[in-house]
Image (cartoon, helix red, strand yellow):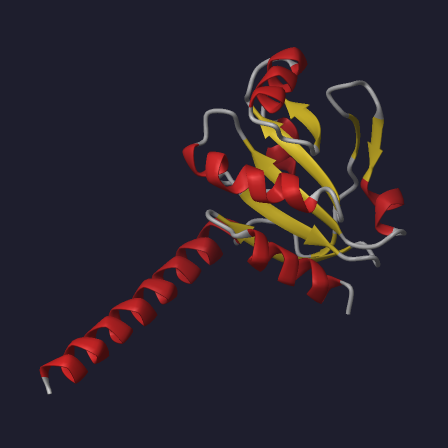
Length: 166
């Protein structure tokens, strides 16, 4: 009998924890764009142009707002990097130094995604960013299909990308 009660308590706790995480993620992402994605045309840290609207014609695009100083980003970035091998990814490094410093950080941590440097935070602010990491997925019609703030897993992000293709 005590085992059943303990299991019920554990399940209740897990459901409450999931509810809290979802609520916090929603709260942080509430100011992000809905509907048509804002224009995003900027050079990456290597000087090559990135055009979100052009990319969406080939399928969904994952936009990853992160920072070198962000603790959670150290956990999420490898998953985003892995996804960049099979999906289109644009990352935006928020207040993380010069393009060379961001490139060095990415090399040291084996991060393979293309990155736009946002040293002042102006680009991130124009998207309504409140917290890092934040991930927006833009579908092939240019609409923001999902926004996730905080922790995210590779599997969860892959599911959101798959959903954006439907």
